[in-house]
Image 1 (cartoon, rainbow, N blue to C red):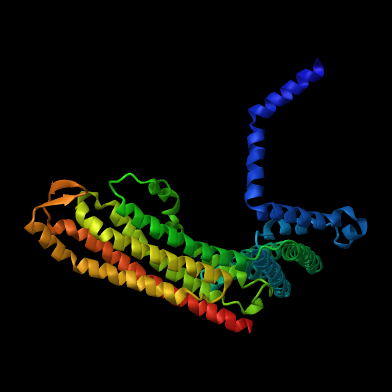
Image 2 (cartoon, rainbow, N blue to C red):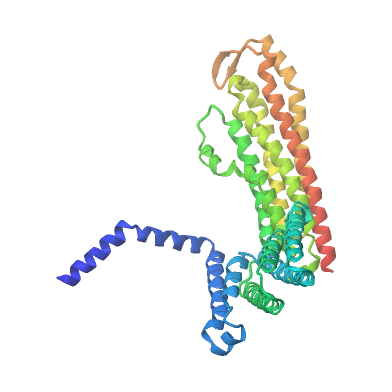
Length: 435
């Protein structure tokens, strides 16, 4: 009975804390993105390798019992991708060495003076070094690549300068700290690069290609929503999922810049080695955001058009041209995504671009013939529409929304052509570097 009560209480506590749902959530995270599970395993392995310096007595005595610095280094240096880990390891190690040597040099200068002047030298040195290092963090290049190293430099320099030890103890302290940090950084880089590496360059490639597909889906759904306004359509059920894709494209600049900076730290790997055209990814990203900004304007306008609705008979007159142009533009973006993903020239791209231009010309022709249609309708105020007789009264103001949508679609088409040119330049240079 006692065992059954204990089991019952344990199960009750387990249920109240909802540990089952928490464990299920963790399992889903690992299944949806196995790289996260591997990252956790790699961090555990790195910490275990560093901990060996505690468990093995000869190694423990070799580092004078200071392996805790290596454990701390693993905790703050190990990043999700290899580029981030190498960047942090380099920053932490180099900043520690430079700060240590600089602090020892200033300590030697201060020791050659009397006690009062020595304190003044230390204070002025700390002030100037902290000021210069902090101000250097505002330089764009330093901010992007060496910001963490500047923080470590300030902390290490200040800690060693104000430690108050004699020169011999100061040298031991600097040597010990530099060795433990170098050891932890080396283990982090080794594990990150050799065991299931996650490359920032590949993550950047996936992000850019995914953004092209999001743009294609968003454009198609946006025009479909507009043409189906006032009608019951099953396509509306999918629009909330696909339409916001252009918003993530607009917000992707920070992620692209970060991944490009991290990819530059990575060792030669993959198809291109050290000569991968990273800068072209930034150009492609900027070109896609240029398209997405116009798409955002189109979506906002079509959503706010409720106050001035275009007559259905005129809207239907241009609907087929709208859908044809959006479909062809979407196909071009999807083919661009395929070409960029495979880093190969598309054999059908020229034909698809021509079809897109033809659809744009057809939309312009339809818009030019719209005044004739309006005049014809005004001559006969009653028309048969969908099998019913309806009185039609047209105003110029009611036609303006259609002209605005047409103008935005034409602008999106022009910007897509610029994206095609940018992707072609990327593919051509990438193929040239592989020869």
